[in-house]
Length: 225
Image 1 (cartoon, helix red, strand yellow):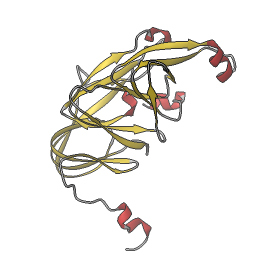
Image 2: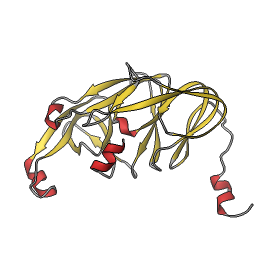
Image 3: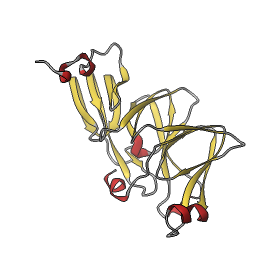
């Protein structure tokens, strides 16, 4: 067979070490030697001796996503082999978390992660302003976290002199050391939404970074996650 499809550009190569790597811009490859976790439905292919098990919806089994509080079901992959993960052809990125680090991420952006990472559900102070609350997953420990993002994300520095305001539908995550609160702006709401309502932004203060995707979640998209 010939043609661009069969070029080396698209050919997967054998894994050289266990763990997570970016296969291409839209896909993460995980060489499993033991156990790892991923969002349900994200596995697109695998080979080897792997078993996939849906995690329950009890403690540690669900992420709560921003604004609506809906859960993100997880699955565990166990054994030895390789698996590929993707979600709606979104761009994939890997975050390496070291001991002492903390990374807060919106559940809808989680693709997969090492079993050595721990997570808890965190809430944003003053989240009652949004009606449904603002929930995020806080990762700690030592390992890699695979994320998806619609488009190329923006990494915005936050400093004590310059707090950053982010649309609650566009925030992907932020690093440790940042204080968060919700800020309501009537003037911005009037400009962006034709005066139909107030705009609510997530305000981040301190020293660190915030990751923002270049799009807002539409109601239809929000229902799918």
